Length: 300
Image (cartoon, rainbow, N blue to C red; front, side, top):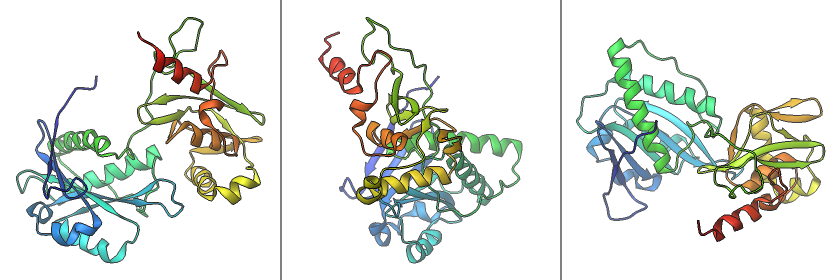
């Protein structure tokens, strides 16, 4: 069961896009969130003089979403200064340390780094700039348990900050649509069919989920290649990361995967630009657009 929690977000310089310090109820940790441009000012913060783990985020080269780097530092600041000089892609950073200095050591943050990279590789939600998978350090049973708790708190905070790189696609019971069922009372199973393939999916709070086992075409129309190169690059990236694999004459999804919108999902499935709100339909033939409009107009 997911428990409710509260966050305290302190906007340190009064700018909502500037430095934010995030603390979570019943947690010894804290997060510093800031744009790259503020590193010269933020470097004086005492938190960056502590041992911690950090994330660098920035746009992918194809412009379709973000990419991620996970690192650790003892302390954090010299690592960020090194990345300021040597890494071009990142535009924002999130550093995690503790409210009281000295509660994390080098082995702790190496463990957190290794676990975060492993989770990101398993989720395949975002390309990683990390070249290797670090080995987890040897920790005592008690320290390992403490770091798993610390990690769980981090993973609870990150989605609130807009980072879903470490999460598997949300798993929910998806009922088939039946006559008289309220539209989208629960995530309704939707279908996208065409060119000899069929995919299933549903709307979630994170985006549009295409389910494991769904099919996608292997060939794209020329107009997608010429007019939407970022969409084409996104498809190629999903193939490279093993989210979809060749299965006979089509691709097959190896896992549930979250797309930013139903249209992006339908483009992946059909190999052409399309309006996902009209292409995804339930078992009764109602489009996602019709379901959404019916739900918006419902007074119940």
